[in-house]
Structures are given as C-alpha cells and as structure tokens.
Length: 257
Image (cartoon, rainbow, N blue to C red; front, top):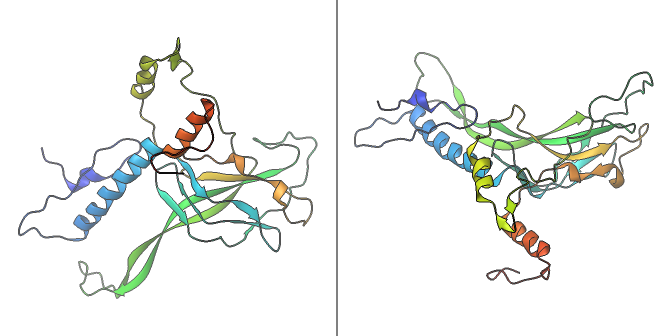
C-alpha cells in the first residue's frame, strides 16, 4: 500500500520518511512543499543525532557581561539533542543572573545544588515566523490579508536552577577491548539492542554559574563551562588517538595542520 502524506508525521525516536514523487501534471500545493522541507530537515537531523551526537561544535563561551549581574554567550554552533543545528552568529545580549535564594538551614539543598547556590545556562533551538507577505489567494473562505513567509532558525538562552548533570567520562562499552584486540561482539551488542528515543528536553547546557552574593556581578571564576557536552569531530578523535598513543601533538593529517 503506498504511503500517504499523513504517514509522514514524525514521532519520537526512529520513523520512516516520505518524499515527493514528481510527475508531469502534478498539482503542487503547500503540503507538498512542506513535505519536501520536512524530508530534507528530518533526514539531516536524524543523521546529526545518531552519527554526530549532540553538544557544542565550536565557540559558545559563557563570559561575564561588561555591565550588571549578567553573562553573555559568544558566537558559535551546536547540535541539540534532536540533531537540530543551533547557530549563534554574534555575542548574545546579556542574560540576567537571578539573586541567590534565601538559605534555609533546616532543608537540604535541592537536586544537584551545593552549599554555594548554582544555576546553569542552557541553549535551545527556536523557530520564529517572520517576513509577512500579502496573501493573494483565499484559503477556503478564510479571509487573510497577510501571512508570514519565512521561518527564522534562532535560539533562546534559559537559566535553570542548580547545576547541570555531570558529564560522564566513563566508557559505556567497558569490554570493547578484549585481550588487546577489539571486541566486535560488544560493539555489535551496543548498536543492536536499542535506538535512542528523543528526550523530552532537547536543550543542551553551556555552563554552571555560581551565584554571587547580593547584587555582585559574576566573575569569570564563577562560570564553569565543563558542564557542556561537546561533539567529537573526526579531527578531534584523531588527535585524541594520537595523544593516547603518545604521538607528537602536531602532525600533518592529509594536508591539515
């Protein structure tokens, strides 16, 4: 049975895709053009999520703002947990840091908080409709004078309480090397047993921020960027392998320095 446009509705985790089949005389309308975009975006985001992973690609440093109790995020790029690309083209507007909450000695600190109260800064993918344009054809009797003609891919920065979860630095395939050789069976088991579902929260943390006392502005020492996940590029993985093998830190890798 051929697939229909309704079958293209995405679901969490793994799903099939539908693309246009063109033929002479085919009437192309909004749903078909939307289907084309959904197909290309969905395939790219799936590969980003399952092949590259999620985290910071480059930049996105978190620094104290020049004025006030705030921080800024520098230009950079990241992949969120859904594989969507987040681009920050220039340094962000200042993000205000909340005041330190009143201490309650009779209550334990919540979550991953420590005696020095923390918050963490997250970056999230965001889409905004823009560029209104006149509507020249009526849509089934609904009188509309204009409609947004573009979708801007942007981002938003969110302050959340306490620290972000620690980055796990332990291998999830502890027995991938057996007797000095690659244990292929262990790798096959890892890949085969499950496909990751999309988490409810697709944002990624950028930094833990220790809350200064009173109205004091945050200092560079209050910002911990090791809370962020990173995407391990092929070049970075190659450098890590060289470092583990004790090779010199600078090598010519196919013309790269």
